Length: 271
Image 1 (tube, rainbow, N blue to C red):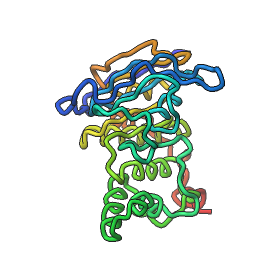
Image 2: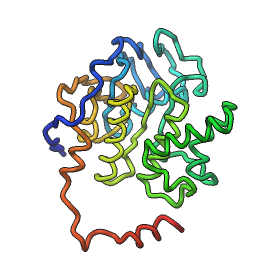
Image 3: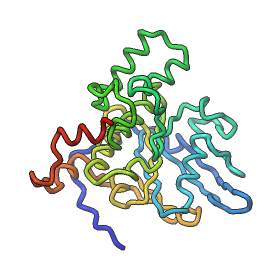
């Protein structure tokens, strides 16, 4: 089924002026096998510093496996991954300056929003004052201050993804990876999350690589690579990047009788 992608708008401007070397992240002839099954096959890609980059493809195309290789959760069977001139194949995930967001959010269910965001900083041994300050910055950035003391089951899917973004950013990685960040969300919430990622890319120059199976979500990237059967079949630079903020504003307004009341929304997430 074809997907109609609305025309690009002018609101979002990627950090083209701040883009670094074409070879900031190099994926060199990477192949990943699982018991003889080839999930990723001879992939060669270079990603520039400051790009917002989409890996697009259907289920089983290898896009999430490739992302996990970048994060360090999988090791390529053959080939090399180089970040800023350093081969990172042998580095554990916690030793890479890269953080990953998962489709399932992967929040600690017994911790509050604040504690989830602070976890990595505490593991690094930062002073309490520094942790509190940085967590407050992240809560403000993702607009979750008033939910700081809630636990994940008391949040909507979009709110949980905002917490996941804050946790991925809190220790200032050079790159953010997002595996189907909008996969469990409705259209409006998906656009809100993509708007936040575009904002991070535009204002902070964060390099962002995200995986999606939806062409309309991939249109929010500055470059889209399509995978099929583990191989790159298309590599397109989006000259006019679609603005998630304007796409959100263009959505049809909900009718009053279709909108859940604030009281009902509160009861649905606070159980």
